[in-house]
Image 1 (cartoon, helix red, strand yellow):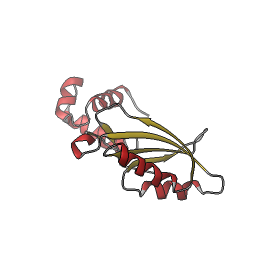
Image 2 (cartoon, one colour; image 1 turned 120 degrees about the vertical axis):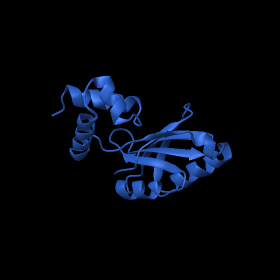
Image 3 (tube, helix red, strand yellow; image 1 turned 60 degrees about the vertical axis):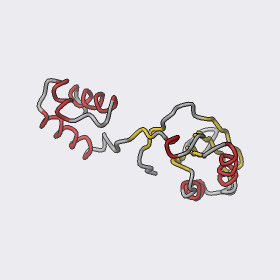
Length: 147
């Protein structure tokens, strides 16, 4: 069970995951060892499962970042489609979801022409319907892709 100190540590890390434990300790008026031990315990308990970085993909030449809601055809297996899509070179993340759509994906492209190719590649995996939203953020938070 998380207590007030654990929540405060998490709040500090959510502001900036690179914040040193010594800085967090000063802000919370606790010892750096307490912060480190609490952090390690939360990792062990899978309260904290990953650390992320906000990456400016434009610096790598990617001008288009799109969020995709995908519906697969009924004859397709959801896990197989997720695996196929996640192996495509410009797909950053995939996640199975429940609701009107079956899969959420995040993809990048260098420009609109390249985006058209990326979307065609995704459709070719067995996608019946696709809803596309262009991102307006300069950066995309990246987490390790875990099923």
